[in-house]
Image (tube, rainbow, N blue to C red; front, top):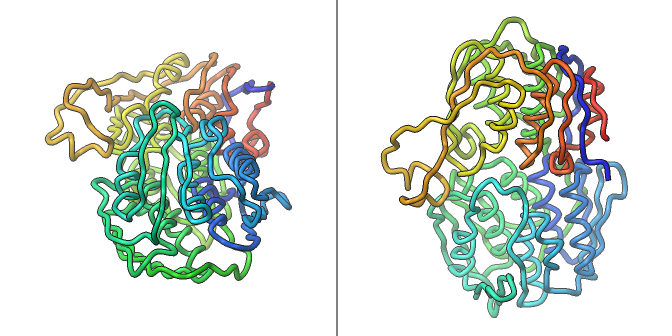
Length: 439
C-alpha cells in the first residue's frame, strides 16, 4: 500500500481550491441517518478515509450505505440487524461511539467498544457516559471485553449540564433525545457550527430542536420524515490548511464554497499583517509582505480551534519574531514539533504557571501529571527537506505544508492518517503548483 508523499518544496503556490464538505459534520449526519425508517441522501459528503470506514462499519451492521455519486451518499437504515459494533471497525474511527443512539432506538440495547481516531489526548468519554445516564440510559463498561454495554428500557427524559463542553457529547445526546419523553434540556453544550448543521438536518426532517447559546432544548417526536437531500457545510479545517499553505509558501489563493466559521483565524491573520478579501462564498488572499509573529491560545469554537494550531505553527516559522502557542483543549497535540525540528524549525517547549489549571484546560487535568502545553517559535527560518512521520490527522497536514515550504525533497510517511480528513489532497496541491506524489 502506498502510504507516503514525495514532495519537492520551496516555491510559492497559487490558484483556486474548491472546499470539500466538512468531515466532522458528514460523519455525524451519516450516523444520524440511521435514526430514520427510510432512505436518506446526503450531499457534499467528502470522499475521505474516515467516511469510507464509517460506511463500511454501517454495512457491517446490516444497513446499506454507500456513495452513489462523487460526493453524494445514500443510507438505507431499514436493514440494520446487529446491535454490536465490531471492535476492529470501531478502533479505526472515533465517531463509532455515536452509534449508541440509533442502535438503542432500534434494539433497546447495544454494545459499543472504546472509540479509535487520533491519539491527541484523553477524550472526555466519561462526560458523555454521565450524560447518557442522566437521560435514563443504563451504561456500564466491561473491562474484560472492552465494550460499553447500554440499555434503554424507556424513552429518554431529563436534564444534563456538561461539566466542560464536548463536541461529540453534545451531538450524541441530541440524537438520543430526538424521540425522548417530554422536553429534554442540555446545557453547557459545545458551539461548533457542525452541531448547528446537524440540528438543521434533523429539524428539516421534523425534529424539534432549539439551540440558544449553549443551551439545547429537544421536544421528543414519534419519528423523523425525510424531505429532501441535505447539503453538508464546507470544511473549515480544510480552509485553514490551504490558507496556511499558500501564505507560508508566499503565494496566493482563492477559496470557494466556503462557509464562514473561521473568523477567529482570520482576525489573527489580519493581526499578523495578512490582507484578506471576503466575498459571498469565497475568500481571496495573497502574500504581499512578511507576516508578524502572533501568539494564540486554543479554545473551543468560536475561539481558535485546536485543529488549527499545527498549521499556525508552520506559518509562524515563516513570520518575523517570536510567537507562542498555548494548547488548552488536548494534552497531546504537539506531536509535530519534533518533526518540524528535523526541517530546521526553531521551536521549544516552555513552562508557565496557570491559575486554576483544572478549569483553565478543557481536558481532564490531573495535578500530579507533567504536561507540555506551550511552545515558542522563532522565525523566519529557512526550512530544508527531510523525512517526516505523521502521528495524527491535523499534524499530518502541517507537516505537508512544511515540506512544501522547505527547500529540496521531503518524504512524509503515514499519509493515510492525513487522508482520513482531506479529500483529493494531492490533486488540490498539484492544482496550486505543488510538486507532490504518492509513493
